[in-house]
Length: 317
Image (cartoon, rainbow, N blue to C red; front, top):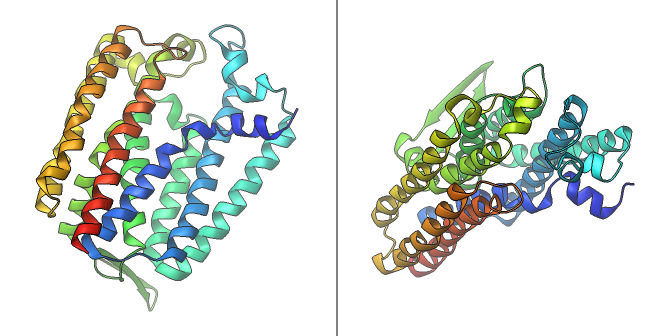
């Protein structure tokens, strides 16, 4: 039965921090670096981004339901919302279509406000989001899910969130004249955003990696050959740990941007709970018991940075 509760389960609302925190990170980065903020641009991107994130998750659940070969065991009846709530297919498809229309409408309005580059990146993001679940071999069924989720949700969202807040040309500029598109990129500014987004990129990729580790047996049953299936559980768990520690490289960038060293102490303090969570997950990878630790690590690493950058921006400006 389709209810508000079943809708929230279908779109896995609890996972939406994976797009909202990079969005917040890019917004506060623009405030620190350029001292600019547009409420209209912020609202339009928020609506488009959240709606499309809901679309991707709902599509993933729907196509998992359609393509599942093993429909009993592994908790399938509980963690697939379509089965759990007995949702009719036409209701799920209609919900996806309405959310997609909302995302596109807000996105078009944002493009009118901010320019062609947002349209280009929006197309790329929409394309990757749809291909994540749709097609003969979706990205979610290949060993590329970690790369694409980290890159697009961690970096591209952060980049666009920062880009829409500043005057055209400060970061990049895509113009159209006489049938020609002309792209200008400030390589230094783009690199800074990439480095600042490293914690989001790393921890989002690890959410996907943790999910795939927990689902290895079920994935093999359903012909989903994810990264852990290729490299083995032991190597996947080693990679899980390494990726987190790489995320602390952004501390050097924050120092260079003028963030006071004392403000970096809360970021360094996250190492203690992070290590504890890594040990707990690698000791017993479980969707029911320990997968949530990967989500907590993401919220911890990215959330603390958002707060620190907000304070730094307030001090500077």
